[in-house]
Image 1: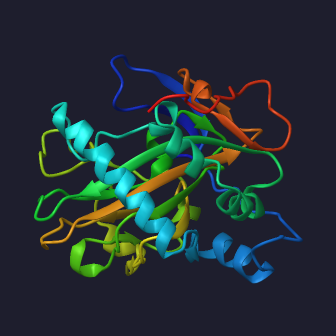
Image 2: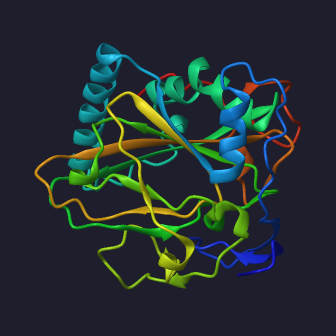
Length: 277
């Protein structure tokens, strides 16, 4: 395990950058949550995740799926794959609307406080029999943010279960700091370029089984991943990323920010809703 505060290379960039980051878990200190219960806040601090939350009803979930179907068709027509729709709120107003949805923001605020910045949106879409895994990883390993106070909301666009490669968490791993990983850039079956090895020593995984319109939340330090989808059903989720306003972003990432609660921090941008799709 690496030191919680260390210089870590940020993978996936054209140049090698070194950013000093605090990679230790900062538990929620919310004493009087408005949506969650105190028991749920304590469970998040202990396990590193919460689920499930019903965000959208059936009609709303169907509308979101139809929107994504059209968006995916557009991207694939341009020669891109089903994992290419990243930072989507910067280009697509409908995704910006989901990222800033008050139902989601209220839950996140109960965990990270009264100042909330939304900064990320990425569709992770496993097509039927696509053979792609998402290796065991920690989100914080990829992000030039400090300190580690980010929360990911994983919103199910399709039903997700064991049969079509639901995501998996390893409870409690968020308190271990930044875990050593191996690069897997030469593995075409891995969507990511890192893998944390020998995860079985950290405990048994929990499957994140969700119905369309439901969501889970997890800490940016929680170990998670998913197996290949060997079924005839698609499994799409929209990851929505939030962090506390006192967190600093480097390498231009502050420009991705949307202030969804509290006064705008001077060190974050506040992107308006895109006017066009």
